[in-house]
Image 1 (spheres, rainbow, N blue to C red):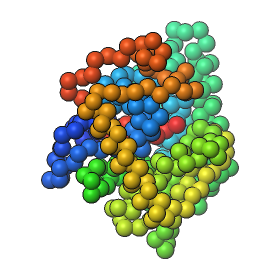
Image 2 (cartoon, rainbow, N blue to C red; image 1 turned 135 degrees about the vertical axis):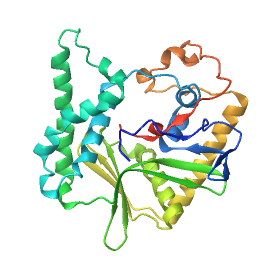
Image 3 (cartoon, rainbow, N blue to C red; image 1 turned 30 degrees about the vertical axis):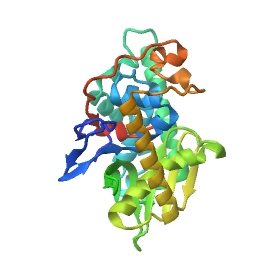
Image 4 (cartoon, rainbow, N blue to C red; image 1 turned 45 degrees about the vertical axis):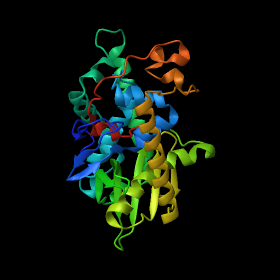
Length: 306
């Protein structure tokens, strides 16, 4: 599954809808992805704005950079191993940007040709993408890797009828069957205090793999291209059971918010970057009325391309 295939609907209802929905003949109470779980735990109101109201957000250079870098790293492994070089990756950036922009017209507003210095700004941004990719080669040698999966969609239905789903950047499978789950981040490695939050996404994916393949992944690996670091973690069954309980607890809290209509804001240091701050009551704003029928949730919502 390509990183650009981000408009395919995998469920026809909002993940906050309380009514069950048949999926492959099974009544599913809802679905949850790592990104939406992170939204809710960070700020329930943000979850509402993004998932229930589905309010548009202006494109950002950081998010677009993440998409372009992920696209290059996905396409790089289509090439013969000897050709997976820093120079080759660098040469792929402009085409990746063209591909990404063609599927999301809103990205064209990032660098408007009418603005003074727009061309220089765009070239400077493209160079920042190339620099991020250069750090990748300091951390891994793609000529020595043959991923089993890239941008791989996974899902697992829990006994509670909660569907866990998402896209994994890369899955490596060793000759002896050991599985490594890899996620690229164009951000910097978090401080130790925030490591657990960062690892939740990969534990979530590891849980889905365990529930579908019956195998606990041997390694979880977060590749931080913004700082040139790798965070590794070896999970066990106890970790994944705890992750399952956490996902179900988050879902119950989402259901409660849906039933009561109470989506509380959680003001913090990241509010300054939130596109929905003008609507937030914590800053004097007024949220729009809740939609009578929540809209569909697209597979693209599961792409974590920061």
